[in-house]
Image (cartoon, rainbow, N blue to C red; front, side, top):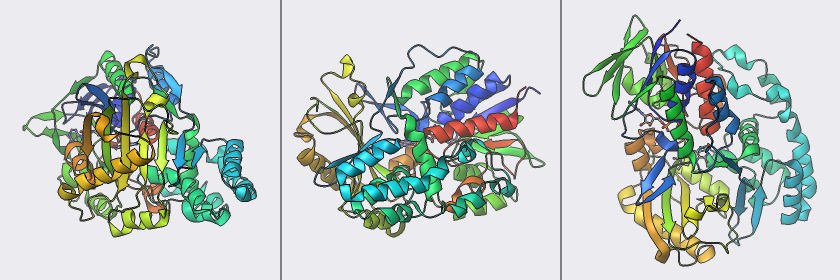
Length: 491
Ligand SMILES: Cc1cc2nc3c(=O)[nH]c(=O)nc-3n(C[C@H](O)[C@H](O)[C@H](O)COP(=O)(O)OP(=O)(O)OC[C@H]3O[C@@H](n4cnc5c(N)ncnc54)[C@H](O)[C@@H]3O)c2cc1C
């Protein structure tokens, strides 16, 4: 039956769900509080330049292409993917580098190059993780996990294969070198979660997605632009500066939303792309309707945050060992994790992630400029860090580190610059505790334990985006939209 659907938020999750449901024949409107669409996956203007806020590459071109296919539309011609290789280049403090891509033979060769004594450990490691790549464990993130029994089919096997062991401790069983232990545990860390807690099964699932790390020409903002265009072509409407303050319900069934300006929008179905904690804590006002979910939300662990510096420089950096995605790991990775996830302190030995898209897309427009995105994982706002006094010294620390080791004259070459602290992610993007990856992907916040894509509290309320199942990141968020489309069905 054709339904009137309201989507709260025009992030990647909201736009993808909007396209899918409009293509399925429903009447869909998206209400976005900001004056721009795309949320954390948007492109921001810094001076005259366009720079990604978040990811500068994606791992799921097929999930984007699927949306156009589902709508029966051809792929836009300017949607061009370029492979990012390696997926990551990881550096130690002596500037030795180690490349990561999703290829077993490649990993053995890199380990051998790094330290030949660790080669047999690497082969043993690969032998023991091999069963996790069986088809039986694939595509689990496409299932809705609405019932605890849905985990029974796979969890016993995952336990038998020691897949619930933490990523860092699993990797450390095989490798002695602290650098290799850190490099092979990085993936969950880069997605805001603690590799001491995320299990190896989940971590490998995240890594599997990196098998196809791609850069989209023009950046992720190009995907956002095309999804918005497709949505409107399918009859969908997007309202900007339209903040929803309440999800209205009658007899435990949604009936519409109330706007900040007092206006009402009736709806048969509501999909929230607002953060899941915000949805349950703030938008559902009815007592009892969300009691359980509110309690659950209060117990949730949020991801780490990011201290981000975006730069455009007046010169190119062609003669550095940097790749598209670079991660400089700290000397003491376990200590950094303890500081970020448990003690809530800033470290003098941080991890720095540096994106340099020109390594993949060297178009003439970028010929005499370098666009650099520097992301530093830091504690979220549950820690008592005074960002008004810490931001400047931290910026100096990071830029002087990069200048000394990789990017000569960096500070003198800056044309435009923007810094975002955890407080900015909280205030400008409604990210609770300034956590851009929403809830951590810990054992009790994954699959059935993660907030579901269909609310149990209110009928016809659905959730898409990073805080809900299957989790944060572009590919997981796109999967959440597909799950919600399947749960709602066609008109
Ligand atoms: C610095 C950084 C680096 C990242 N790196 C990576 C990476 O390498 N790989 C990767 O896969 N992912 C990465 N991510 C994460 C990725 O960007 C997010 O997981 C994804 O974009 C989240 O999309 P979403 O749709 O869940 O939510 P959001 O992007 O948060 O969108 C939610 C939208 O809802 C709107 N909204 C909220 N409340 C309301 C309301 N009450 N009324 C109306 N509108 C509302 C918001 O304004 C926003 O536009 C990174 C993010 C950041 C910030």
